[in-house]
Length: 266
Picture 1 (spheres, rainbow, N blue to C red):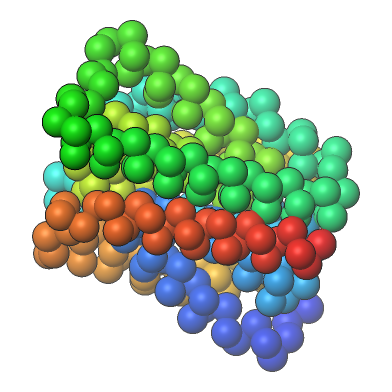
Picture 2: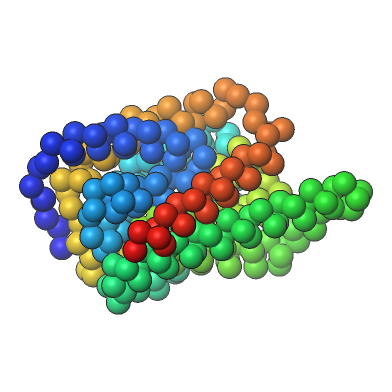
């Protein structure tokens, strides 16, 4: 169901939140849904089910504009992105109904647990790769079957997460892309491309089972679209390949922090 909530003065901050999240989302390839959800729930006390669908709708401009920008700057592995997207669409359609079956408290706690567990996975994965390099061991290859298996698993998981939590599902996508040892700029651009498909599919499903607050969407998206224009250009102008390790670590720490916040404020 689509509706307009009554305007409140505190909503004047939403375009600013949207701009910051749009810039960050397009810069790190996350789409921004991971940050929209805590803002809506923790800052504005919007019910969890409404926050999920509203977050998805506000994320679309970031994904669309950011994907075009990353493609133009060569920050995208289109073939791998299509593999993840196909599995993600299936996951999104499968996971949309889960949101309506959970209470707001269950949704927040589930999102928190998911965030913490995935952050632990990313840290452990990076630690194993770092140790392998230090020992002079080669990293696992990505044969056709291995690549298909990773893409299908992480893509499907991302679709389920997108539809269930409204967070764009970028974290499992990026975890899978990093596991394929793609350069960080390709991880960012390809991730945002996958998130676009996942978000669109999940939003379509939520039209049937969820509630979308267009007042919040318009205010968030107006700022998010401007932020998304800057992210790809900024990423292409800097050399961050050597900083992949710290980027992955702090990204995982941010995920864990948001997850813990969602759990303790249930």
